[in-house]
Image (cartoon, rainbow, N blue to C red; front, side, top):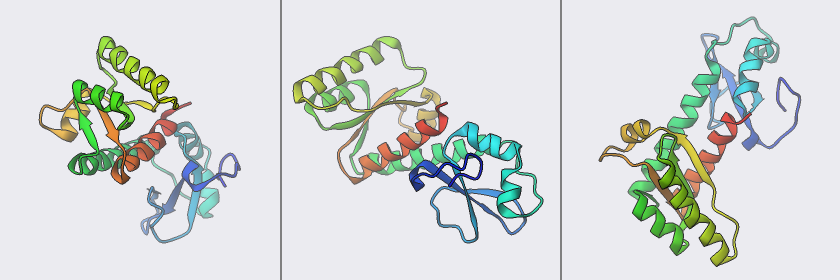
Length: 191
């Protein structure tokens, strides 16, 4: 249950926070850190509001001042988790970059998600969007999710090799891990 909204939800829809030995509020994205946890809805606005309104102090029954940038810290950790999984999936061949490869994977039905850099050109986004729609109609399936979570510069920094602006996650355990983490980050950033 969220310590701010009191909304009950699945653990996937919440972020766990713990108190470090030095009294700092620490996000526990993997739900593995020891100690009593305080759960907050996995939305940036909710995390920031919980910090501002003293919900963590009430939950941990102690006086504390959570960091002012707690929302940004959680965002950075979620992004790092996503990029780590993208790299793992890329090494296993389940995450490929480049417009041509992305389009081929979409049209063949192998792609399970499409990624664009936030600063991607509109014509490239449109072209791949058409491929997503065509695939959904051809295979009579729902459209694959499309994410815009990182800038081209961030993608370059994460993946090297000149980076990429468009990419796809392919079916498989690593590819599904990428989609799961991307969905969580997108939900966290949404209003």
